[in-house]
Image (cartoon, rainbow, N blue to C red; front, side, top):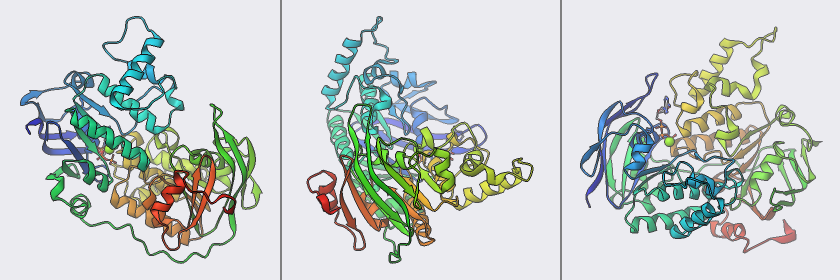
Length: 507
Ligand SMILES: Nc1ncnc2c1ncn2[C@@H]1O[C@H](COP(=O)(O)OP(=O)(O)OP(=O)(O)O)[C@@H](O)[C@H]1O
Ligand SMILES: [Mg+2]
């Protein structure tokens, strides 16, 4: 196969002096799936944004079919057949699927024609085997549908080189399977795909070759068949990471959280929570498993007061908190990591420091109610260090951190409050293997220190590694409660998740 694309000595220094890419050279062959891996902040997204014309190159060259190209914007890259799906989606929330597909498309009709746009969108979906609802507004779509729409947008514009920045971070195992099937189809039809992921087993499965980045430099390109997961891990973080932990036996304490008969219907009238009751104690990690969209997010949102249940109650330490505000719930001692960290996890235009103290500003006020700047600075520095957030300093705007480092900053904030209960919704999504292991240890430490943890995760290995009990949600109900003392069987878990098995009244 020929080199379709070649990057030579690419260096990127961001304003402010961050050296994100240092002399990176690598090539991509026509028709291959080329994986790009590396720890958080290694420079993967930056390199791809340069290739996509979104970030300027500080020095170096890009060759497409042997010819040097210079892109001054994504428009140039798109014109050369390069498309990118970003780590954080870039769709217009208030627009429908069809409107998003047409947006900015040069071949769009002069007069808008909704019906024709919807038909066109459905035709594109059909052509590439995607199932999406063209009429639905993006804000009402789940992540998987949003992602399909993003990929369709690229294909619709005729891209032949598709860059996917952590496409599976937000998908369930089933959705990942589906995406991989699509990618293999696209590869067969002659597309070239660059695929970024932290999940090494996926990278092993889907890619032909792998390039490893570390601290802005390349550690080489390898044939996937010739390199093991352990080898990749070693190249990325300098050691082999294991997710086997020695857990102390469960000695759960007093009840912290209880939900009683929660019911919730979404705006389409779909029942998202159907008489859901659960209880969680001190020193206990309760895992929630389920295919996305079975009510997990609604449950979390209701407990944290971001959403109101139709009926049912939430109790924290015996007190009814069903109708309390978000602030009240936090002040009572419930910390949380939301699923969508860019949307409601942080304030992008504020510094890391401001984001870190946002959880509990009052503790940084002195007697005169003035913020104690020194204390804030020291506290931020301490957390940045402890949680290994890769940043220039505490004043860096949070949105200019790498994806995984934004997540680490939010984790640092939420794990450092005095809360007794933590609601974690996909806490390690988009985080590199080294940092996942670090965060897992922190979660276990907090459990041992007496906190209670509700862990919602689409990563079954994560649930099995950490949870004391795993509850499986299916269509808004808990269909199974599994003791995870001796690790539960993943296959069986899958049967409950798909609704094939159900413990019924026994739960
Ligand atoms: N707009 C920006 N301004 C300044 N620094 C930036 C900007 N964007 C990224 N960086 C820095 O560049 C480095 C590389 O970031 P990049 O987003 O490319 O990492 P990544 O490999 O994609 O990591 P992740 O796995 O966390 O997504 C990081 O140190 C990051 O803080
Ligand atoms: Mg990235």
